[in-house]
Image (cartoon, rainbow, N blue to C red; front, side, top):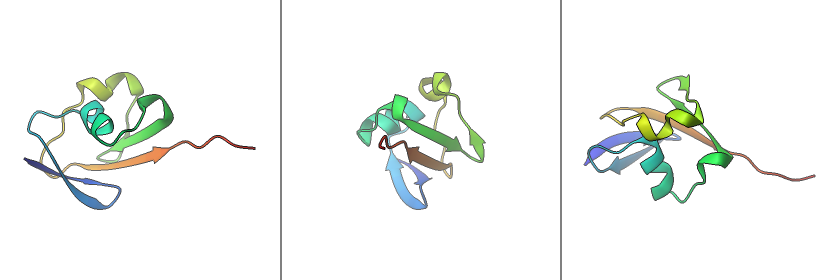
Length: 67
């Protein structure tokens, strides 16, 4: 397993996981979140091609619609 930090909490992901894999495992729709990976905002198009490495820090913000 690979240890990463998601929203300040430690999390284990399988080796070779991408940001898209992490979102899928968390049940998050990639169209409704913004992801910061090691201090950089990721474009949605790169979620599937951005690998996770030990010690990575991610912040995932879920958009809520309302009014």
